Image 1 (cartoon, rainbow, N blue to C red):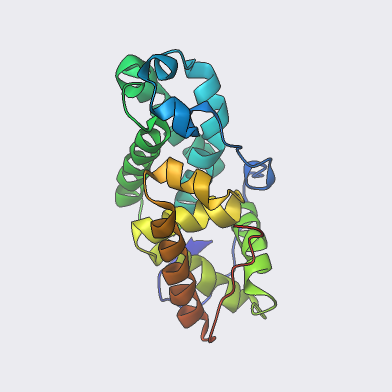
Image 2 (cartoon, rainbow, N blue to C red):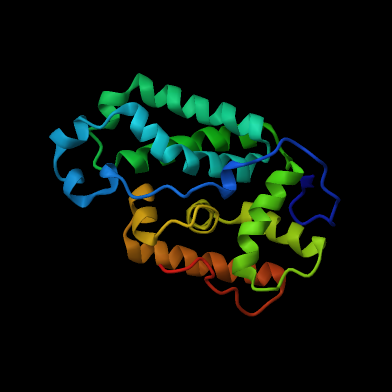
Length: 216
């Protein structure tokens, strides 16, 4: 399916199965621990493979949502991992290695999207993203047209809001973990989420889109 921002609804086409969006959400790990962030020696001992295993689901969810194809998303994730491997010792010197890696993933995705507009979204990717947001929409999605509008609205969100939406609703991460991923205060994450829900609600033509992601 082509998500043409603001265009009439089009039927989506089939594609490769996407299993990652409904997988186990990443849990807080050593690099998100405030005590570890304050101890550079402990950070420097963080294994590259363990770091990637923990944070790949977030990079993949970002790439899948914005690119729409599992095979293309995997290419982006592979590029992120390769970049991290080349400068791993430097990455570990950042106060928030996960936040640096997220910014790197965003840059790779942005470069891909800039060269591949409009976004071609595989049917199963579309279904997985919308399935996650049906919990948030609370019965507000009554037709495929509503679903397409919501997906397009997610893609149109400002980067900061789209990031927290993906991490919160697709992966179900706690706002404290999201704050560590993005290198932002928890209060800022709450604000980003609130503004994102307001934007999505306006696009759907409803008064409010509640936070259906569970405990914050």
